[in-house]
Length: 306
Image (cartoon, rainbow, N blue to C red; front, side, top):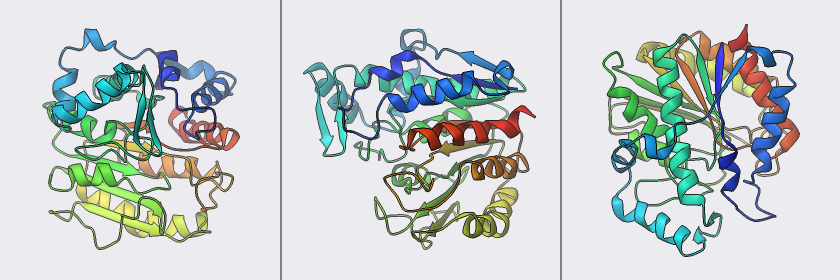
């Protein structure tokens, strides 16, 4: 079975009418999941409210300095603004970003404490947020925070983060690359924003695997990379938990990149993941064409339902 963590509060992070990372991304996915053929097999869960998770701030501060956290808080409190030209903060963005981190930590808890997988349907995304600032639509580094959180659980010795968003997760990599107990794998278009993710970037402990693909790549390029690179790398690492930074902007119809995957290809990606470990949580990153985004999430979840 699979549990989806979602709250309408995630719609309150307002980015502007023309911004691609908009609330409609979530509503499109929710509508699709509620009418999917396996809808009755999904359990919906609200994220733990921030006030009921007193340790939440300590987990965020484990990754981001207080000065940056307060910067996001103060911009929101002043009525909103921008971290950079792509990364707006609205009056409720700080509260929503905290709730998003809470949801990602809930996703870890579900996987570790039940036999279910989890899908964290939250925004803002996180994989571009570096230690001291957000960028690229991202405020806090959800995946990295979740990995460190998981490692504090007694049964978890190694965590892998698999990032199939079309853009390299420069923030996630920068945060975890010096930690031997975390592996980071990224499939991403290159050249593309943010300009990082070369194959030569391998981490301090050879715990990073970057697999850049050229514009125009499709499943015929991705499948050999999975079978010859990703599966051997992660099988050798033997993660106790797999966190998937699930971005869907590698779809052919997506307006922000030039890779030509189809929604059903993400179902194959999930099947590969299930061959590595049954302890998997997915967290939403990018994906900006609403129909293909929703179809891709359906395809991702289908193999988990059985």
